[in-house]
Length: 114
Ligand code: AMP
Image 1 (cartoon, rainbow, N blue to C red):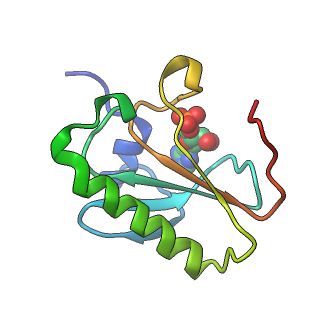
Image 2: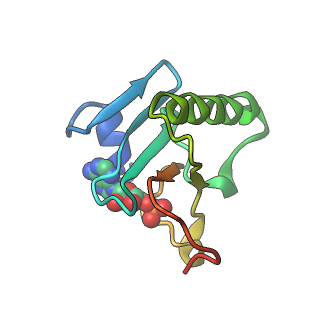
């Protein structure tokens, strides 16, 4: 069996995280190395490696994650806007092989990304 990812270890409560929200399907916690004043990660509890391996049956789950992101943004009063980023694969800059949505806010974000 392959090794657990760091995010699976957070889900399994083997390592701590600054958790903002949790339900049966997902977990949201603060990024350990924030790239903006607000940097939250939203992850499914289901072990999905990346966008590339989302299954058709995950459609409702992915929609749920976006509603959770919307709710967190509202709760954190990110009224000036925010960015949701999903890195996928090596050239996409993905470091952790467990699907995660970055919620970034609190400063003017630039485009294009690096
Ligand atoms: P990515 O590069 O898209 O795979 O993003 C992985 C993110 O996970 C990075 O922003 C890391 O700072 C973050 N990260 C890694 N380990 C932890 C941890 N133990 N707790 C919270 N965030 C983490």
